[in-house]
Image (tube, rainbow, N blue to C red; front, side):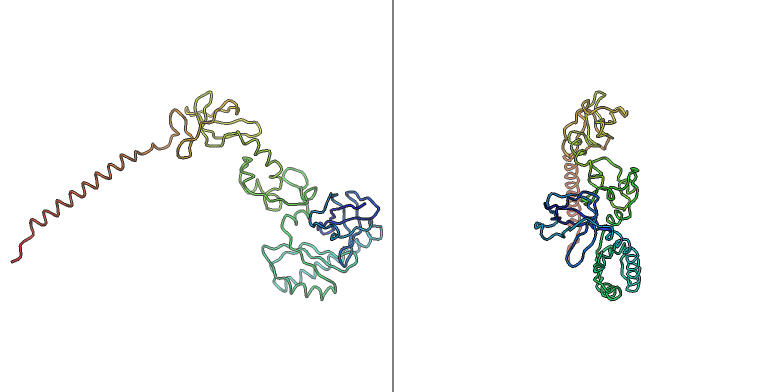
Length: 321
């Protein structure tokens, strides 16, 4: 029976693999897999129904068996080599003055490959670094650029909710998140309140996004005018979860109503919805026709004045002798 597994290596890299052996693997098992020219150990973090990174399962690394005590002991001995490789890589980064931050280094179980992960703001030309490290470590080198979210997932931490970070527990794929999600949930758009430990927007902003969009469909927005049991007013605040709306009435009071107690007034010209009685306290509209008439009168007056001056000049011009 063939299984598709999502494996996580010691350095935090995740990859999909296929298991064609008679053993059945479960989440948390450490298994021995073969990929290309090297073999390594990986922990099963998820059982998949089908491959997601490729259409052909035969292209995936092959899981051969569960890890033995000898495999685990060899992986423990490789930890010291990992630290040594990271130290040498950092020395060459400093010598070459490369704008990159090294995160970790990992030897494969057979020592045929060293994977170095780093963070950088943009693209980095690390070809010279690969040459020098290959010569110093006498093995094949692979450099992988990762994001700050991946780096945070490796180190771990505690979020503001008091729970371990989602990326360390169950979140293995990072979705696209934008400020619009925070706006539609009526959250304060301060960086400290919507940013996570990694400095990016919190991943949890997407968890309830669709639910908030559903609740927001028939709720008024801030600035909308509405009709309430206490008279017409303007929406100044709302709570999507309790479906309560705070309205500033025409009398100047702030009153809270449920959504069913108010009626949103239709929008008028100028993309504004105004109460039927009274105005919103802004400046009165100008009468365009009156302004145009005044401009016309001023123009005619200026024209008549100009003609009068011209006639006077012609009348007083002395004749040539």
